[in-house]
Image (cartoon, rainbow, N blue to C red; front, side, top):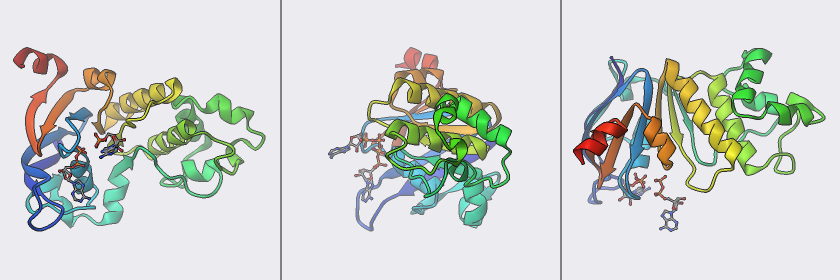
Length: 228
Ligand code: ADP
Ligand code: ADP
């Protein structure tokens, strides 16, 4: 069964502007990892914008669990579809508050499990205030901030995780964390990545190749190589 479907979706940012997506139909399975690849301007980010309802389709529709996306309340939608962008802002406050942001009653065990997955557990043990450390750029680096955003997504156990892999060079730990988070969430839910790394594409269950707003090819890495 599909969690999410794009049904002949066409989108543009302004009347008269070129279409950012043109007649895209796509099924995203309930479980597993779908990687979206394609050149700059292909429409990858637009797919995310539609899923988050930052943008409405001009024609066609998106359907989540059999219900058109525009009929969901935003509150329910934000619980089901979690987005980790390239530079996810942290909320002012402590590490614990950040990790619990979308899941207030997460247990300590869950928080540490998520921190282990993103390779931050040892680092947090070293901080004088541990989980109660107030986050600031003086305390954490950019890569660590990205890993906190990933840990927060893990804590909320999303049904659908949207992940825009940073195009900038990630440090090794952050790259490993991204990989691990994708694998973990994809065991119980759907992960949709804008993929920039070959390793991510190779490991994906489904690759969608976008070009000029249209789906040019779809399949596993092996399938795409053999039909090229
Ligand atoms: P994505 O595939 O995630 O949508 P893009 O392929 O559009 O990203 O862009 C790749 C990188 O190049 C991003 O970090 C983006 O900020 C940067 N970039 C895109 N377009 C421009 C531009 N016209 N000038 C400078 N940087 C750009
Ligand atoms: P990608 O993420 O694959 O780089 P985008 O989805 O960002 O591609 O862009 C698809 C098309 O929509 C491009 O032609 C781009 O110029 C256009 N576009 C993207 N964002 C905007 C925007 N905010 N306003 C107007 N046009 C946009």
